[in-house]
Image 1: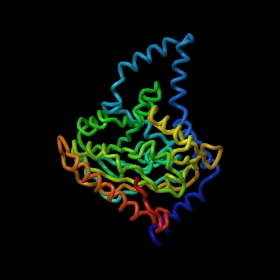
Image 2: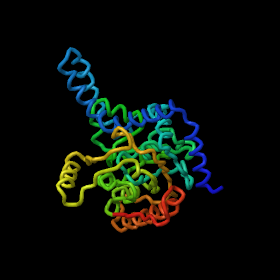
Image 3: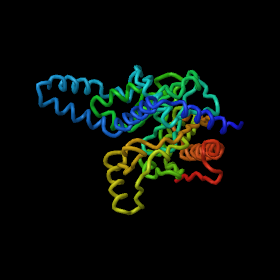
Image 4: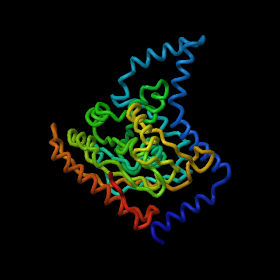
Length: 339
């Protein structure tokens, strides 16, 4: 039996053996993640402001004092306590789709890495589950390497929510934050960046494999400055989890999305899942980690060096996509579009 056939057989067997209770727990686990992604940050902010006008105002006051004192912690590696990563709920979330992490090459624990994760999708379910939880076995596949998913810096300004995401080991996707992880935390660090960001999320739709990175070279420059090897990562199935209304370029809807993205740093997507609007489609997501690209350390990298390693990275990403697309459920005719 082929590897793909064996995997399909295992998934089918696992699905067949699931009880209704197990399926319910999986659905609730995914739903809490989606609702947390969408509403938890705003809800925490509203709660803390509301408490300021109640008899519990000392709690908010003490917290905001703590917030000021702890303001720079996210950009200094966050917290060492990462117990949220080990919650059982993430295993149920993994099984819902299911999500699988695939290793194609070893990562030397005596080096540092920047992993570029593609595509963004609506919520980066593959990136979050594989690199910000222990449910997919990253630590076992890559012993001695510690993955840190870096996300929108503005999220670390939201009261209470910032503590929650730091307990999951996440840090801001900012130059000081990445520099700290690559220079002050020893070796064996893998900084995971969803390169396409908000712009890529707007292109997310079933059947589409588009990544935004032709003009995104900042991560390559940082890799050169710290001598961190570049590793392409592709999450097959990520774009299949939600249906999205995609506005054409120049339309009023797209202009409003671009304006919001410019102001807030992220883009509001109009999407719908398979059930109760927010629950995604039960589509397998396979996150494939490619081979590292050796990058020299340059205190002041030239534009030519940045362009060279950026080109090597794009070629490696395209190669990774085409080598694994069929085994991950795509047809041979599927193409990867890099914009």
